[in-house]
Structures are given as C-alpha cells and as structure tokens.
Length: 193
Image (cartoon, rainbow, N blue to C red; front, side):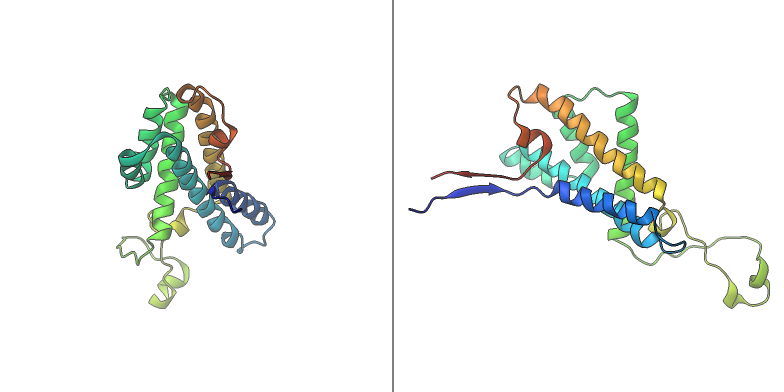
C-alpha cells in the first residue's frame, strides 16, 4: 500500500557550507586569485541569509501574509519577521541590520551587474601621462568588485550566524513548543495518508 509523504526541503545549511568552504579556499589562494573564492563566498552567504529568511518566515506567516512576505524586499522581510517574533531592537540588532543591508547591496550589485558609467577628475599618474590607453579605470563603490574582501566575507558569515542566533532566541517566544526542525531549519518528511 502506497503512502502520501509530505516533504519540506531546506537548503539553508548547504548554501552556508559552500560559503564557509570558499572562505577557507580564499585564505589559501595565490595572490591575485583569491577574488575567485571571495566573491562567490560572499554571494553564498547572501543566498544563505535569504534562504533562512524565507525558511523562518514560512513558520511565522501563513496564507495571504506569506504571499505578501515572499513579495517583500529582503530588508522588509527582515523587519517584518523581527517585528512578528518581537525582537528587542538593541545596538547589536541595529548593527546586524546594517550588515545585512551591506549584504543586500552586494548581492544586488552582483546579481544585477550592468555597465557602470561615471566621470572623475584626478591627476594622471605614471604611464597614464604617456598615453590614454594606460589609464587605469577606478572602481566606483557600487561595483561589487570594489567591495569584496576576505574581511567582508567573514563579516557576511558572522551576520548569517548572528541572524540564526536571533531567530533561535526569539522564536521560542513566538512558538512555546520547541521544535528543532523549526528552530534550526532542517528538511522534514512525514506520512500524511
């Protein structure tokens, strides 16, 4: 006799693990090649954060609210989730929120990368004085290539960990019954018929 099995797949931890592995590889990379590991690491921490935001939100928001939640901006989701589980707004929470805003800006500049046109006024240096073909383009702040670093990757990792800790701490106020699958975001399956 066949059974109907209801399954929920959660990939948060895999995305985070990829970011962690890439940080390790970046630290050991040859000079000039670390960016090939750092940028993907930062991206995977952004993906892990967004996935966790959706995972945790799926436990809090139902039906019409869930639809509104999934259509909200990432910072809108974070604020709504924190409001719903009654997170105390402290300096640490504000710092986390600011770090997450940096993650979102990085993610958006990476995912929606397009040509960046700008002008600057500066003195030419070195070979730039000989011929225009030697002019070195400056990277503006809204270019993801100007914002990658091992320190930023580690900061993104820390933000994901702190977000988890905030969820674990405050979700118990929202859900009086302890359910590890809800608290830490794990895949589940159960027979429904």
